[in-house]
Image (cartoon, rainbow, N blue to C red; front, top):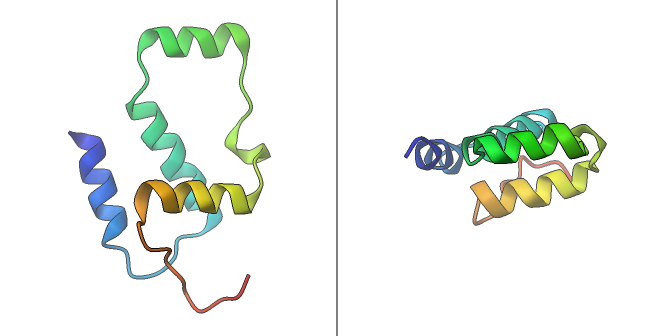
Length: 77
């Protein structure tokens, strides 16, 4: 249930969050869905952190999870 609250809060945002905020939001949403087996697999197999994923991919993933209509703050980045 907590994840639904997170998503609802993101939908109500008025301005676009920073890419670092988006990375944190994505990590938080993923962590909320992890179980012990997932954590063990990550520790055994390793993982690629969100810091190594391009900004545009982070923004696209964030928009797909938290914003059905992309949020724009007037920047043309």
